Length: 243
Image 1 (tube, rainbow, N blue to C red):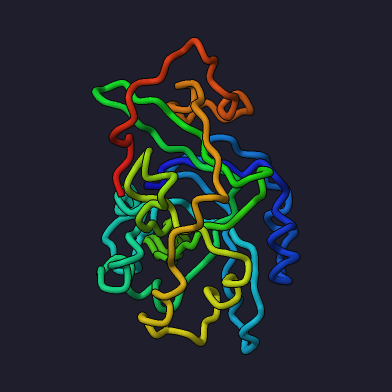
Image 2: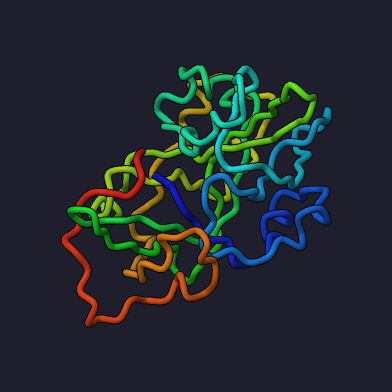
């Protein structure tokens, strides 16, 4: 789980924290209320430099395609990576050591309920504070020589509050861990693993939203509006997305 998220606030807040360069290339990214897999999203990564504190903003397609994949369709099944095993999985282990990134967001969705009809919930930090998912990125070259940059969101076990919706949640990093996560000089899997923990329960709030968010074609402020109380949601269990 993380199958959809939002980025409705300007990106410069993250660029300022990390002193990231190249901000003009993604500074005009429009507000997104229903970011779906397969679309281009903003990431922050270490810049190719001798300076370990040099970072840059870039764009990458959501759904990681490892450099050895035969085709770009591989990314359809790698939108998430389990943080506990990413360092061992062929699709993620190289990126886990050498190509880590931050994925800016300010909310995400989870679906809960029994049967075919599930209730979507919008999850956010208190005061709608923006945050960053822990991510991995890769560069893949097609047979025609074209280069495609892609990414994935790392997941971990859900904290106590979000476990009511699903047993997994995206890894959200505290600001003090940003530079450590992006440090290209650190490639010890065990040391990297220690950064990836569930974000504290008390920081979150969530509420039901309409099924409008089910379609990625809908990408506007109506997606995060609270569902009317008279529209009773189904019993909480299950998820529209996997791990």
